[in-house]
Amino acid sequence: MKRKCAVSGQEFEITEKDLEFYKKMNVPEPTLCPEERQRRRLSWRNERNLYRRKCDATGKTILSIYSPEKPFKIYHQDVWHSDSWDGRDWGKEYDFDRPFFDQFSELMRDVPRMALVTAGNENAEFVNYAGWNQNCYLIFDSDHNQDCYYLVHAFYNKNCADSFYINRCELCYECITSYDCYDCRFLQDCKNCVESWFLKSCIGCKNCFGCVNLRNKEYYFLNKKCTKEEYSQKLETLQLHRWSKLKDMRQKFAAFIQRFPHKYYQGTQNEDVTGDYIDGSKDVHFCYNVENSRDCMYLADCQKCKDCWDLDEWGGTGAELCYEGHVVGEGAQNIAFCSNIWEGVHDIFYSEFCVKGSHDLFGCEGLKHASYCILNKQYSKEEYFTLRDQIINHMKQTGEWGEFFPIKLSSVAYNESMAMEYFPLSREEVLSQGWAWKEKDTRGFQEQEYKIPDSLNDVEDNILEQVLACEKTGKNYKIEKQELKLYRKLGIPIPRRCFDTRHQDRMDLRNPKQLWARDCDECGIHLQSTFAPDRPETILCEKCYNEVVD
Image 1 (cartoon, rainbow, N blue to C red):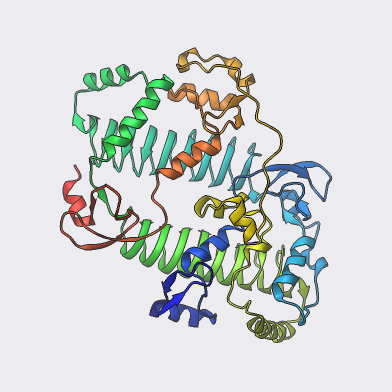
Image 2 (cartoon, rainbow, N blue to C red; image 1 turned 90 degrees about the vertical axis):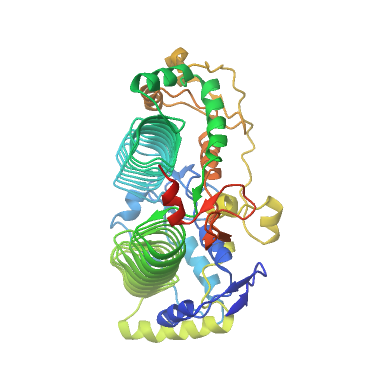
């Protein structure tokens, strides 16, 4: 069944499998294409923009994802998680003469919001969507890390920096979608590699440099075998402790990668899947960065999901029968049109930040251990179901039922949200849609007077007192004491770009979350791949790819 997206005008398909799921969830068919549905969800997520403002409970200055001018009550996360307040104190009667979204927007402004989405961290103040980290700085969407800096979507790592989608790594720098690696730099799509530099799509390699598509090799340099002595000499000659040499090597390796074939998608131990970076899953389609999931579609950054459609982030220990959600997991069941719903929750619709065993909620904000509430007002079980059904009928009349929260209701501006990262728009385009835009700080950046030595060996401790400026954007940044210590341990020169620019550089190395029709360049079999047809890389199906890897 073909439909036209109400926003983009793009034609999209609703499959029989989609229809079965919508019937199971008792929700209408979507009016937006998958891309616009994801844009709408991501517009509700500020992941990496932090501000100083007052806690409305204690009056203390705190860090928050909400800038000071935002019209919300903001509680420090420790206060928010405590039993010192109850969101039901702001409960409202439902007004059938007004649209639901207008009433929910008012509730959002009344009920206290979590300053940062964090829990269980130790000496890790500058983090968000992060838990159980120790001695970490500027890490986001990351849990269970120790002594790490500038990570995004990273789990169970130690002494790592400037990496994106890494798990269980130690002493790693500038690594992307790599797992179980030790003492490595500049890896992408690698597993179980040790003491190596500049690898792409390698598994089980040790003491390898500048290699692509290798398996269980040692002492390889630019995909050629060498002795231990030859390898050490070649590595020493490169002088990668110098910024100029390292920059040149990064450019050369990017060109070297293009000489090798690429598998049409990244993933292992799957059955009947489409998307990219999928592992241990079955019957999942149009999914990205998904693990151990079954019977799902349109998921991103999720694990252990079953019968879920249109989710961004989490799953955790399990999510089942969830639809159109953002940060939904930890035993979540029968959740639809929600943001930030977790920990043993079930049967919740159109709600935000409702957690810890809550169930049977509709249109609620900031509730814990709650049930049978609508707009945060407590009802009996019988009253709840009667009123809920009446509200759903009302929302069908207003055209709201079946739609995720509108972008214009988001608590953050479009250019603060993850939507800007995956669906960038200009200021004019955003404002023309009636969405919020966060204006830049009027204060200018400070020019960098300090000259960073080319060699790490010449960098003295006084660099910690200097204000540096990004070579691309001019944005100021500083080097932290523990960060410098890690660079020295890894033999990495001081970065010349700020964290945001370095993160964007890593984003640019990954394929977009979009599928195109391709044919295997060897056998001609039809594929769906994140490599666009006009790209120059040689793309192979899994069978042909396995025949050429060494």
